[in-house]
Image 1 (cartoon, rainbow, N blue to C red):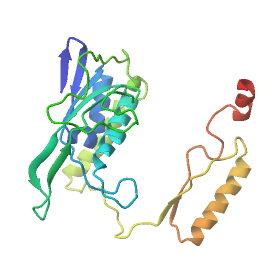
Image 2 (tube, helix red, strand yellow):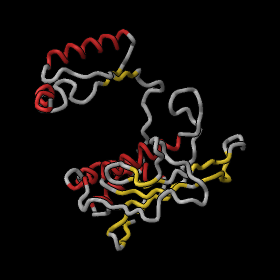
Image 3 (cartoon, one colour):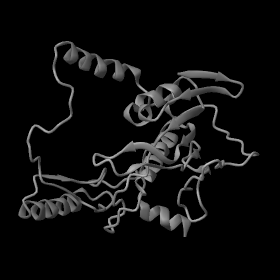
Image 4 (cartoon, rainbow, N blue to C red):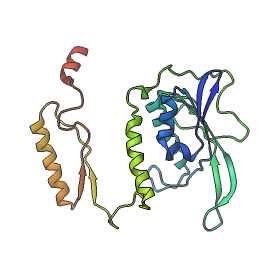
Length: 243
């Protein structure tokens, strides 16, 4: 839903809509919206997020740092996201753990910086019931043009979704499960290439491919532009000019 306000167009995206349907935010931005209003109910999600073996309840931060920041950065939107705080009535399968909502309400601007909702050490504010996570004088500004202006392609969406609609009308499944029960053994290469030296980079990739094969890896993924180097300008020349 698009809302006309005195500050311009604002889009409304509620909880699941936001992360299950990213094309909604792209549509809002392409229509000229500058603000995304996001009421949500994202619980703490007691999982081991940082790999230290402790289920510390920080799973909710994933919602903000991965979903909202990517939307703000990609689409140039200022996002006002309000989360529930405190326990709620639903329980887990054993009937023991009620939903525990952290609050964590945030305002994220188009460049993925936080106008409100972030502590000095970079962690997200955990909500306090009855409290505001912003100040009364805060003003959220945003650019008059959005980042999707040149890379939003509704013709692609029309083609892709027409194909899915045809499958659905034919009673074909739209699931995204693997065809194989166990799936491939996957590895990713955390490497950097040598700028403009394709042969050196090919040799490096072959070495990693051989290592992966020895470890029975089925699928090995390398970073973007690893064959050539990321920038079109020699980074050594750039360092010389700035030295």
